[in-house]
Amino acid sequence: MESHAAGKGSVEELANRFGVSARWAWKVMAAYKRSGTAARPPQRRYGVVPKAVKEPVLAMFERRPDMVLREVQAELAAAGHSISLAQLWRVVKSLGLRLKKSRSTPPSGTRKKIAASAKPSSKSSGVRRLKT
Image (tube, rainbow, N blue to C red):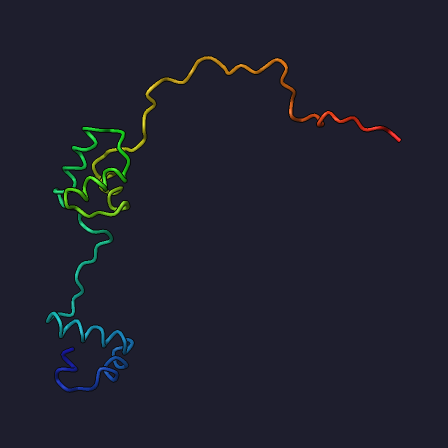
């Protein structure tokens, strides 16, 4: 950028001289004109979720542990917070919560009864064929 500002060549010529693509050089020049620096801002993979969202989510799960994410999302929307299900899942995970529901009753210890007259399904339909 200093070379271009000093008039030592066009952006394309300077890109060739420094071994970068002209397209990248134009992007860097545009960013420099826009912000005054060529340094790229730090990038984040996901958006930052404010405490104003995390605290109500925690309170909702303490109040009703069997809530599903769509219900939490609807309650947050009613409170004025717009959040995607994917982001909400990351919030739940970051709070150390799980969404696995526990069974309200233990599994039955008795087996299901099978009728004594029930026929196995592997046999033929019962139609007898004559041998010829």
